[in-house]
Length: 448
Image (cartoon, rainbow, N blue to C red; front, side):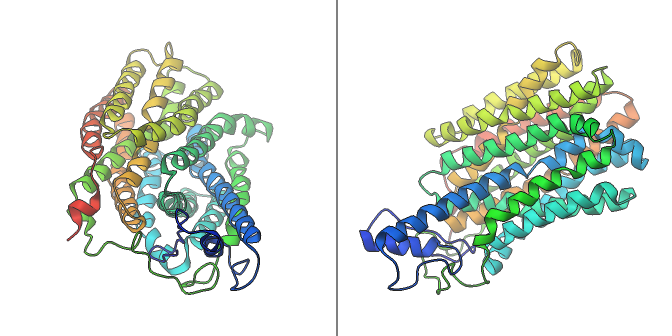
């Protein structure tokens, strides 16, 4: 069965015999590749479905790998970029606020773009935008050009951020936890790898920060390829047919997402965890460097923080889907964050590895938030609306955080006030996370 509500084809595989299997394979095949009436056998149909699913999984993993290197590679070389472009601390803080700004502005456009062009087209274009932005920004020549090229890459990240939970919900409705875990693991792996190897790669390529940043464009270029089979003409089903209505996944009549308390709680939770994450990615390496830690080690410490998300991003979503209330997980992650900030204040160099580990655990609020997006709506269309609302609103709320940290750092001359701000923000993050973790759906709260 197909649904065009967000431009994503959904399949029904729980009922029906061979004919149903054949129809399913027809519905999910890439443009024009299979599913012609009367053509092929049941085995061919199943083979097409299996091939399509494998390509989709590869596409999801490669996309996730590319959703953070543009940010963490810059964090590892922020001091060199500041010196090379003549940035002040406040401007550097603005630079670290660009990601959530772009995610808020462009993320809200993702469902509409997916309905018009198809999600495969949108994600494929997103990966191309990331590639272009990463290749252009190191050689833009000035701060303004650097910011514009960064925004291009971040635009591609933004639309993919929003569409990934929707794609998982639609294509893998019975495996939301497992697929969200796989996606989150790949995202954490890309994040940590960029943080860990950007400085060594820069040294290998001659010590200039420009090639050290541009090299990540190669990874995003590879991620374009698996989405090409899913690029299709707007307004048509992948097989070229007319999409059928699906009452199980269609848009809920009268759903007004802003009337849902759960949607607002999830949006604020998403915004506060994003604030913590982007402050960490943008500034943590600098905190360690200011404490006397060598640049290479500081980048490795940031990588440790990010790599903690690889195993935990797989475990936490699966655990979350088994619990009726995700509040206890929210509290546990928040306590780890508070302990990490306290450690950075009292002994940033002496206990550096412990603080990196604790903050790595705390940053796993991101895969938890993604999982709750999939759990707090019953339908694919509901997930699309909730994902766009929670992520766009959340990233909008997170914009001032990194900028404020830069201003406090420049004017106070140390990290005491910025770390105090980060610790204070963790308290409301835990509070709204508990509210968002309650067992209810936005359709129940916002539907009419």
